[in-house]
Image 1 (spheres, rainbow, N blue to C red):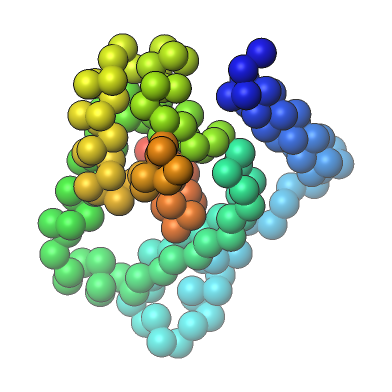
Image 2 (tube, one colour):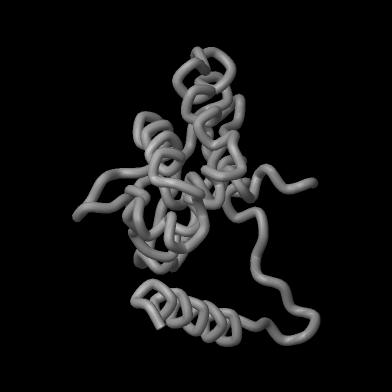
Length: 163
């Protein structure tokens, strides 16, 4: 078994243990809309706000992150940089690469060996796009997701679900 496979199995075991530890008794749900209620109570946010946050554990570590912008900031600011960052995610193969990198850093040869990409050229093409947009960083001969991008990435994926 390779080091990557061992790390992935250990990560899955940690995730299952956390899920089992956080099971709620029948009929009880965790508190919802905590951020929404906080926005409503903030007099400085008369026009509201958009916020996201998370406390997550991945193969890369433990992350706690919050971000908020007043409604007027979102509606009045240009979106060019944000759209460019989003467009870097708009490829299924890049999504698979990022999902893999949530477990642990990886080099291009590892991504090829794991069958995530078909060739080093393909991997470098997609990694360069993700790197330019700030979704990945080079580290120790491989690539990782920067800590400040973990929760935003997971938020984008969650927000993209059918509601």
